[in-house]
Length: 184
Image 1: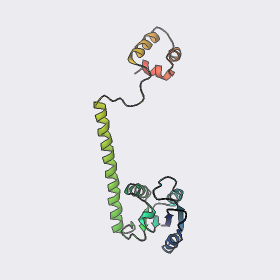
Image 2 (image 1 turned 60 degrees about the horizontal axis):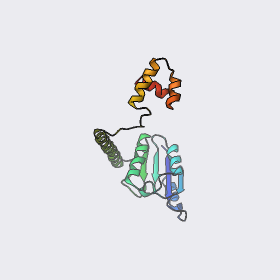
Image 3 (image 1 turned 90 degrees about the vertical axis):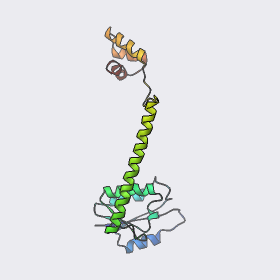
Image 4 (image 1 turned 135 degrees about the horizontal axis):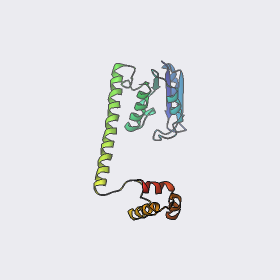
């Protein structure tokens, strides 16, 4: 079981030496550190490297929760990734966030359940919106390249011996579109 540390400061004029010292004192064998705003979810290259270095049973150690995530959505996403990899999380200053202990594991499990609940609510709202739109006659996907009249005409002409390639050229569509018009 390895302890991998992650340190982050928000701006280039800040210093993460104190975080690194505390992570080393906590027994971290490897520490990933970066200077990046917590609002930015893109470009957290060192966090990505830390995730790649973690193996099942390892512990990701941070000094404080706000060094890892800035929003509950971000935190829940990170927790999902850690759980999926069988990795534990320990925050040195936030004693409640320590999944190496039974109490911390309970918190971790509750947060994972919250993330799952949120995903299900989002999915439910999306499905309701799609159902409402369909009931109002909204069509999804790309517009059809050929209308019903064109498809009937193509079927007649193909039955009279015209090639799919020739029809595709004339209607300015691909051969696959002509094939789908003939074989709905």
